Length: 114
Length: 115
Image 1 (spheres, rainbow over the protein chains, first blue to last red):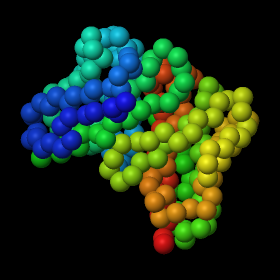
Image 2 (image 1 turned 180 degrees about the vertical axis):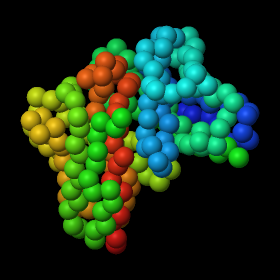
Image 3 (image 1 turned 120 degrees about the horizontal axis):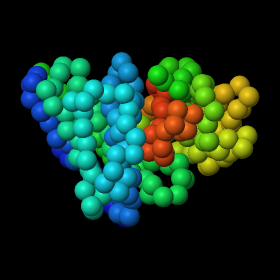
Image 4 (image 1 turned 90 degrees about the vertical axis):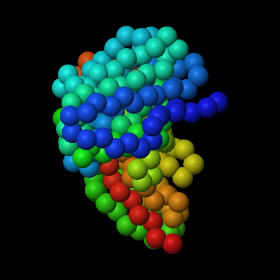
């Protein structure tokens, strides 16, 4: 069974630009969550999608948005990039139906904003 | 705000020694999990302990949970150089109205195991 796949793995943007990150969950998983990891703030929850609907949202500004497609693949977008958005963005999937608790993480997309 | 806080922030030991990491949290939980992260990579789930359990084992891992003290510990026995990584505890966000995919992570313990 293939794991969670995130693309791109690395990217460099400049302030003011926007970026779109993609996540393909484990086959059969319907829940996709996104996390931002920085040295200062650690791992912070961005949002969770289940069956194309946002189920939960963390405390991030509206510049951070996401969506989920009918095949459960998810994208997140960050507009008007700021230097502080430089981070490792992690996607995690779970079945979303039975709360086993465990999340399966991808390798992350490392974003550098110059 | 961070739910889980690990202690110590960094730990350096020799191969063969045991490593103990602690985690404290703030609100009521359904379960507590431990994850491992190799430098700059994704997180790997290690073990989950439910709120009605006190201790759980998996291979060289032993996790304890004390809900009265809102704390947990992760013990890695007979550590190996390959155990070098950061270890995070994570709690469900049910106390904050969160859903399954919404975990609250601590800042982690960076473990270094020297050969």
